[in-house]
Image (cartoon, rainbow, N blue to C red; front, side, top):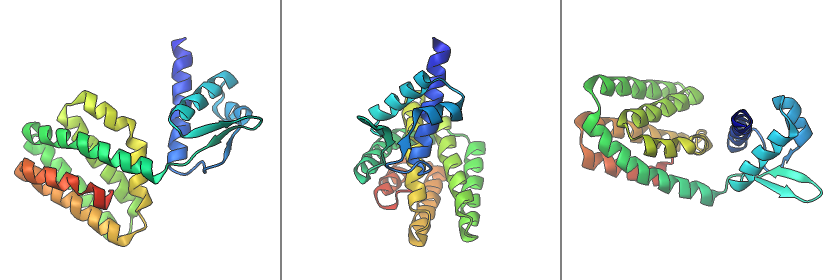
Length: 205
């Protein structure tokens, strides 16, 4: 039974990732027999995974048609940005209290790689480093429950960053925000750091 649950969840996570990143387009049919073949899984596993997507409003069941993918609305993204800000305020407040100088140095190197990649128009590489930066921050805060919630929305956060990846001005603003956050971490300046976190509403990095 546990093995079946794990299989369903893994299929759900992969389909979820593809929908959020646009690899599965809005309105595209999610055909159970095709997905069962692709994932080497039973139709029962596929149906359970699709029901999970439906609960998250990422898929819709249409009578006489089956399941189709749904896109991510701007309203949903705005909600997630607000949730992220609220949770990251707690995470970063704890981080400056517990992070070591060696760990700060690692974050600084990651920030420098982001800058270099963006300066050389290597946007995807820069986005991967940004993902690594925040994953490292969440881990080093040692706030497991909050980090777990943030991890749940990792794919949403990635799509938010990548939606603005082709906007040069937005990329510059995001890079500046990351550098400002890094500077506040180095100074262990909690008040300034929290102000920078609030800027996410503008940069959506």
